[in-house]
Length: 382
Image (cartoon, rainbow, N blue to C red):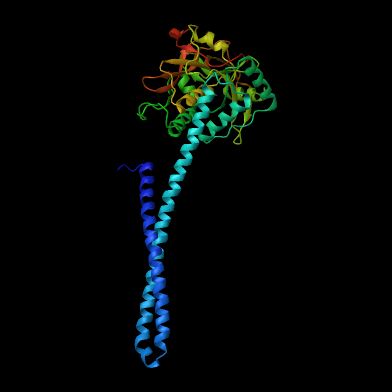
């Protein structure tokens, strides 16, 4: 039998059942031993009356009583040991049952959340987000009162939208999110070939791949072209990754968790399939809102993986992340990266149902994708 948690629990349960029978036998023996001791005491007292006989018989009776007492103690110890093993099995089973019940409850909440026909107010939606992220070991911070008012207004204008809470992470931390989801939610459809097809693939070469490893750096292609990651800020400018986070915080569009991680609350289309378009990557990127982060797209897909409802078609959703051909002005502390208005390559999240894997990849700004392209953000933020 394979050494799995389920089989280990099964063995504990079997030991627990054996323990129940052993414990009953041990306590029956205890009662018999106690009766023998009491009988021996009574007999000894009787035999001690004729003093001439006591010297010969009493020592052997006392020895028998001591032996019976030792048997009693041994059976009690055996019983306690088996009862302890049974308790381990029972506790293990109770823990599995509790975890399964909690997972079932969270899955039900997520399914309700993902169905656009269900009307959920802001607090209900945030409650689902907290339950989901709690299963992944994360605590969702509370949005400010001003944030909530803005989100409520968006939901009133877009009743089928959902508020998706997601952390803003260093790009290299993104794959771990999906790895955790794969380990946590049993209904996921990610590939079983973890060495070949991890839940999230990210490039390591190319300008985009190099910049993902160090989002505030620049990439020199050796031919006079310099590239950097750029993000749309609330004021309409294009900024670096660190300045993007600062801009979101200053605009009151994020909340900080206990570990100081910033969280975005993005109004999104969370359907299995979002609307597709023949527009170019650049045209779609112009419509992408400032809080439509790669993490928000990943969160939508993790929600669907949690309840086993992945897309059966190849889809690309674009995020507020792009590669820009930049100019570097000044030196030292006066050094400044100047971003153009238009991106060179646009980053998107690609789902491959064949490989059952997501990829963070880039498309040139004039690519149209043949109706595979789209965005999930709802409303306009810039």
